Length: 186
Image 1 (spheres, rainbow, N blue to C red):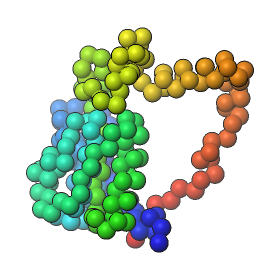
Image 2: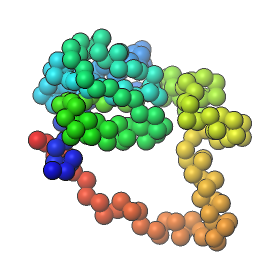
Image 3: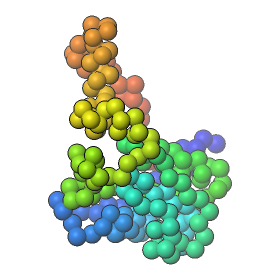
């Protein structure tokens, strides 16, 4: 049986999008987590896996203590930058399909306007990321601080080497363009 037949995203929770908030990142994560748990028709006691978001500065123990999770059998923190949440979904699905857990709570998000602005990373707004050491040393001094700036350099180099244009890139179909997306409730 495929993993997609064994797993599903059962609940979603989010906090209001605001410019500035008096709540900490953890408080926002806990609010959204409780909403997602309720949306899934579960209680916190039924959560046996937690995958916190490392970029937001939360850890599994934050959720164990604040939500009163009695029997956690799986926790993992994925460190793949902007792809962390998608990677976490994959890891959670694998943990469920492997029989390690039944219900995994994934949390993500940060206070991008009021506290954790990407543009202020060099000033300590977001804790240094071990994977990004090469960026800190070789790219950040020149103002390259976000993914779009890194990919732009690679795209420009490709255009230089092979004579392609922006129009050529726009004309290339995405390899995911015809991939159906579905969320199954089991």
